[in-house]
Amino acid sequence: MLTDQTITLAKGANFAVFSTVLPSGRIQSQVMWIDTDGEHLLINTELHRQKVRNIETDPTATVTIFDATSSYQYSEVRGTVVDMVRGPEARAHIDALSQKYVGSPYKNTIQSERVILKIAPDRVRDVTVAA
Image (cartoon, rainbow, N blue to C red; front, side, top):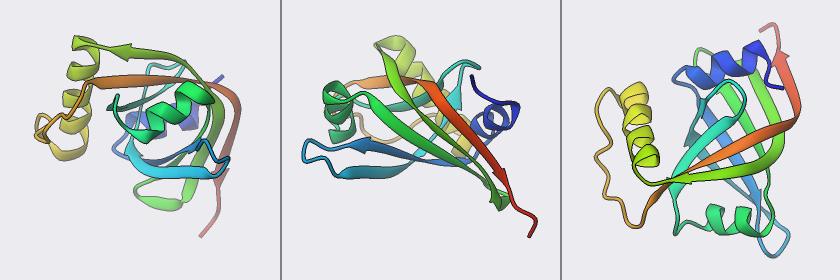
């Protein structure tokens, strides 16, 4: 279950590091925009990306969300991608994320199709360190 801190961080304009397992067994990490539906963490990407291929092979993922105002506060969520939402919902979601992070609809060229990766938490760790 997501914690209040994790939900707050995911709803804010905070960046996340999204880590998946490559076919070689090595870890691949990217800085991503993040969202939540209150139950899952949501990562929006495109179908042709390596991270999607990684998830199709091994659905385990780790997401670390950093507070933009204090890097000493973050949440780490280890979980499993339990659903991939495509189509108009995923396209609308990237526009909403872009509005949250940059204040306008998504302007980058979409090379394939947008997809929302829904990550169910297996373990959540909230950290707040006094600076």
